[in-house]
Image (tube, rainbow, N blue to C red; front, side, top):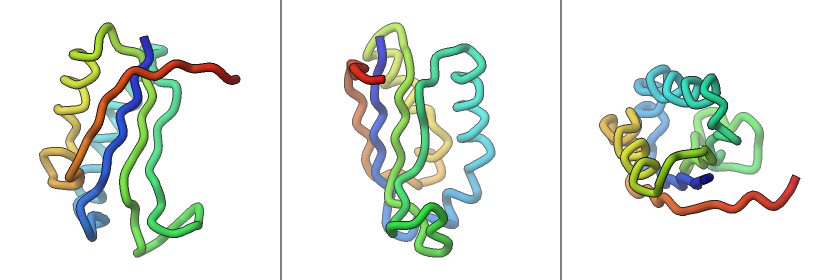
Amino acid sequence: MLYAVISEDVKDSLEKRKGARDAHIARLKLLRDEGRLVMAGPHPAIDCEDPGEAGFTGSLVVAEFASLEAAQAWADADPYISAGVYQKVVVKPYKRVLP
């Protein structure tokens, strides 16, 4: 089943993000290579593709996991958690309708 991992950053998270980004992206690439990643990306802090120093306010990942517990365990192990980037992470089932 698909699950949405909806994360909210701490204030001024950009430097923390930069420090943990490579490890964070490596985990997403593994999901992609396994054919389980639907989409992933950050929420820019301003209405712009590249927010520069404004940074980001959180992230969204939609991927396939065996269960809600497995999705939660994956989210809990994100390098952005240990780096202090995220202040809140919600994992919930997701039903893809379109496209």
